[in-house]
Amino acid sequence: MFKILLIEDDVSLFQEIQERLSQWSYEVYGINDFSQVLQEFSEVKPDLVIIDIQLPKFDGFHWCRMIRSHSSVPIIFLSSRDHPTDMVMSMQLGADDFIQKPFHFEVLIAKIQAILRRVYNYNTENVELKTWCGATIDYEQNSVTNDKGSIELTKNEFSILKQLIDQKNKIVSRDSLIEGLWNDQRFVSDNTLTVNVNRLRKRLEEIDLGQYIETKVGQGYRAIDEASL
Image 1 (cartoon, helix red, strand yellow):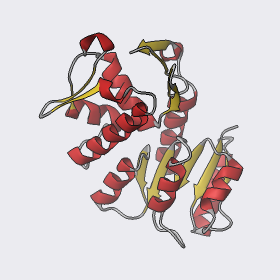
Image 2 (cartoon, one colour; image 1 turned 30 degrees about the vertical axis):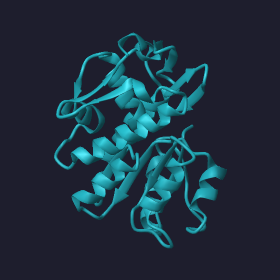
Image 3 (tube, one colour; image 1 turned 45 degrees about the vertical axis):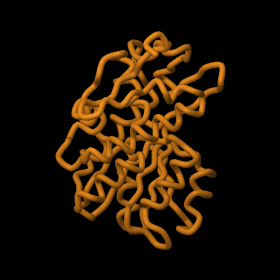
Image 4 (cartoon, rainbow, N blue to C red; image 1 turned 90 degrees about the horizontal axis):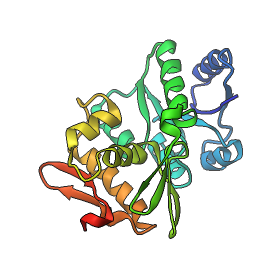
């Protein structure tokens, strides 16, 4: 049974979502103290987080940052706010999806199922380990390991890395990366992708691999191997 942490202060909406998700065998937890969201997140150890933007004490963006500093758990924003900058901000912070209220429950459950399937239940084709620049790329764990250590990437970071490694030594356009990440380019700015690539490169620098992601100005990015340096 997957555990979902629903960070929502609207009691009636929380209860409705909790009841509906329980019918799909999900175990849904709420927040008791909205000033201690990170602590309660650590206690629950959820498999997925659904978070509203407008919350008491601090907004959802604050708590997304805090969660992302500790975990790569998938995150879905659920909000009545409809400004494109909210969607862009959620992507820049590493969220996996953004659903606007009011919403059809069928849409929410479909997105939850798709994310959980992608993150926790890779098919046999994707489970294989790949190597790149002396590192092992684990498609099941979203991790990169070499003799310098091991890092676990967020869904967005790993998606970018996978796209680049799948076309190693070839330039992957910015549009292709954006489409692979979010499917809908209408509200995604170039800066959003840049933020995510910079975050990926910073993580890779922890195990001395940052230099193997090249920026090709005006074109896109490419993952090169050691022999290409």
